[in-house]
Each structure stands twice: as C-alpha cells, then as structure tokens.
Image (tube, rainbow, N blue to C red; front, side):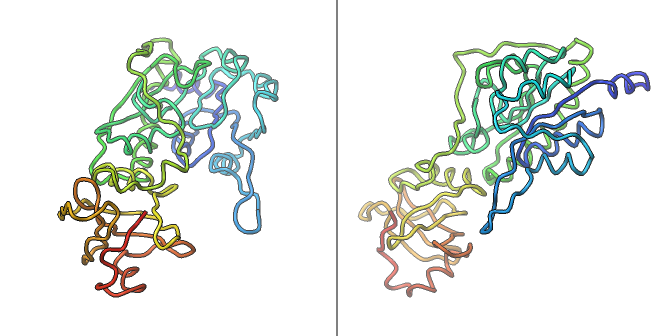
Amino acid sequence: MNLESINVNKELKIIFMGTPEFSVPILKGLIENYKVRAIVTQPDHPVGRHGELKPTPIKQVGIDNTILVLQPEKIKNDIQSITALEPDMIVTCAYGQILPKEILDCPRLGCINVHASLLPKLRGGAPIHRAILEGYKKTGITIMYMAPGMDDGDIISQEEIEITYDDTASTLHDKLSILGRDLLLKTLPSIIDGTNSRTKQDPALVTYGFNIKREDEKIDFSKTQREIYNQVRGLNSWPGAYCIFGGKVLKVWECREGDKFDTRLINGEITAIYEDGIGVKVSNGEIVLKTIQPEGKTRMKALDYARGIMNKENIIGKILE
C-alpha cells in the first residue's frame, strides 16, 4: 500500500462495535492500520462477590488507546449519538445488540460484520460452541454487510479453518479471533475502493448457532461417545457440561472416548477407574471423565476425586445422572 492510500485510510471515520474478548484482536488490528474514531460496546456490568463494575474487554482497549467509548444501554434509544459522528464505515464483531436501520444506513461504506462461521451456516450468537457441539469438521470467518435480519447480509469474503479432534470452544475461539482480524484487514481495502465481491446467502443452506441454554449443558449418558465428547469440549471453557452425582452438580471439563462396551450395564453407570479418569457407560460404549469440578470446588483430576470420596471397590456401579 502506498503512502497516499495510507493517508486516505487514516482520514476514514471508522466506528467499531464489539464487546467480548473475541473482538479484541479485530479492534487492535484496526487501530494499527486505520483511524478508529469511536468504540461502541455494552455497558459495564458488576462482577464478583462485591459487584464491582468491570469494563468490557473492548472498552479497555479504547481506554488504553484514548479512543472515545460509547456504552448505550439500548442502542435503539441512542441512535443520534452514533449517527452524529458521521462514520464512513461501521465495523462490528460480537457487539451483542441488534442495530437499528437508521444506523445500518448511516455509513457511506456500509456496516461490516466479522462473524465466526462460514455463513449461511451457524447464524446467531454461539457459532463457535455450536460448531463443535454439532460435530462440524470445519468452520471459519465471514466478512459480510450487515442487514436487518440476523446474520443474513451479503457475504464479502470468507476463510475456513479445520476443527481438530482436540479443539475446544476455547482453542477454536482463539484461532478464529486471529483469523477474523487477518481476514478483515485483507478485505477492507477492496471495500474502501469499491472492488469487493458481494454474494447473497442461499436460504436453503441456513443453519443456526443459537446461544447456549442451560439444557444444552446437561450430559445425557444415553447419547453416543462422540456426542458427549463433542458436548464437553464444545462447552469448554464456558459454560461447561455437567451431570449430577450424589444429588450435586459435577462439571465435566475434559473427557475421552473409552474402549469398554458392556450391554449389561445401564447408561450413566460407572464402569471402571483408570489412571486418567472415571469410565461411564454410554449408549455405544464408554466415556472417560478426565477433568471435573465438584459443586463448590475447583477443577481436579477425576481420578483424584474418585480416590477422595471412596475406594475403587465401591465406586464401580454408581450412577451419574
């Protein structure tokens, strides 16, 4: 890029909208290459035992770089504060609120969204979790024009990434965050000079990555090894899969597919104690719980938990629900 184009980019009025940690590399990449005039993020929320207000990760980036930060409780009630800035472009990534039409129509170069899936697959707020939960072999990043519907705007660019057998929601989150930064920076020059492609989404291919609900977190031991394995890693590191043991919640953070298969056992029955965890009967064999978190305690190795509550002889045959 020549010096003249750099100067033009620095004169662009760009507003960035985002909230969680996932958005941080995207915003930092923008700041390093363009002039971000303002940041819009969710309001601070109380955290911890004492309810202290903590800035969102995106707000903290704004503070560190002395950029104007706006935090409307409901953006639909504070449209004027955005449009008054007369942005040339708005870039969003995991902001967390639906943008009104008045804001979508405001910037001359459009509202551009960085979405963590290969649209039209996995529209919605939890595409990373859902990609693993549903056994996807690949996912990726989509740069798109925003539209009034949920993630249904025209696609500008995409780049895919493999979901490995060992990936968790946490590791995939980090990979996609960096991929999102790089793809956005690669795509922006064509948007600015008007040479970018623009592809409508095929309605027949749409799937959804809806936000995680409490019922998505509970392990059903009547499912298969792979379904449970995907559930555990797809909810790691937030919010975590769980089962019930002895009337108390037992979070499961890590597991593996086991080798034992015994049709005489019932689903959820503890099959064996291994050096790396606790075996549990499932519909097509066994799942081995490796890292767990008993209610009110910290994470620990499942083997240490088993040794701490009973010996190997009387834990076999107990039921996890």
